[in-house]
Amino acid sequence: MSRRSVSDRGSGSVLAIAIMAGVLSVTAMAVPLYLVLAGKQALAGAADAAALAAADVRVGFAPGEPCAVAARVAAANGGSLASCTVDGLVVTVRVAGSVAGFAVGVSATAGPPAIGGRTGVE
Image 1 (cartoon, helix red, strand yellow):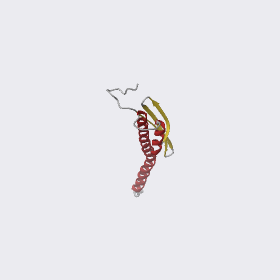
Image 2 (cartoon, rainbow, N blue to C red; image 1 turned 30 degrees about the horizontal axis):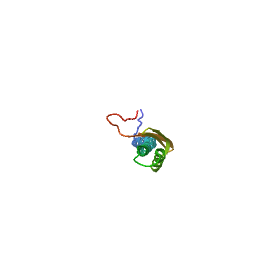
Image 3 (cartoon, helix red, strand yellow; image 1 turned 90 degrees about the vertical axis):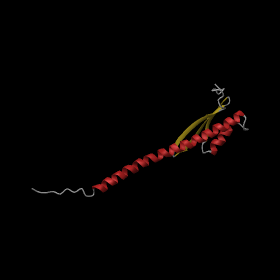
Image 4 (cartoon, helix red, strand yellow; image 1 turned 30 degrees about the vertical axis):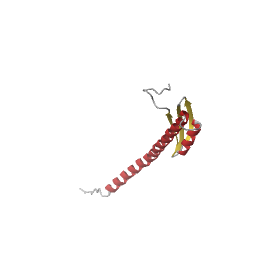
C-alpha cells in the first residue's frame, strides 16, 4: 500500500483571487450603468427647468418666446432641446443628451397649477 499525501495548501489563495475577479467584473459592469442613470437624472432636471421656464413665458411671468427660452435653459443645464410643444398654457419639452456614449432623452411638462382639482386645460 502506498500513501499519497494530498495537500490543500495554496487553495485559499486561488479562491481569494477568484472572488476578487468576480467582484471586479461585477463592478466593471455596474459602473457604466450607474453613470448613465446619473446622467439621465441630470437631464431630467434640465428638462424640468426648461419646461418650467417655458411655462413661465407662456403664462406671462417672463418675456420671450417659450421654446427659445426652453432651449437656452436646457443648454445651460447640459442638454439640448429636442422638441417643444405648446398647448394653451401647457408646455411639453424633450431634452436630449449623450451620457457615456449613450443617447438619452427625457421629457417634461409644465403649466399653470390645478384649480379645484382641474388644470383648466383639457
